[in-house]
Length: 108
Image (cartoon, rainbow, N blue to C red; front, side, top):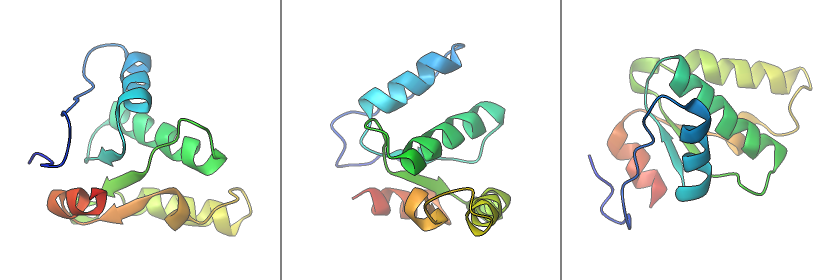
C-alpha cells in the first residue's frame, strides 16, 4: 500500500542499521512501523526514544499493531510511564493502529 500524498516513498534497506536509522530521521515526515524483527524493533525504539526525549529530529511514530503484534511493546511503555521512567505517556510517544490503511490514514 502506498501513501498517495507522499512526495516519494523511501524504503530504508541495506546492511547498515545506523544508515537505515539516519535515513528515517532525515528523509521522512512520519515513521510507520510494520511488524518485524530485531532491526525493525531497534528502529522503532530509536524513533520512540527521539519522541520521548523531544529531540529535534523526532518524527511521529505509528505502530501497525496487526493481530496485537506490538501489544507487549505498548505495555512496556505503559509500565515505564507508570513507574516514572518516562516523562510522557505512551500516547504522546507513539500511536498504534490495527492495520496498514489505518496507519496511512493517521499520517494524513
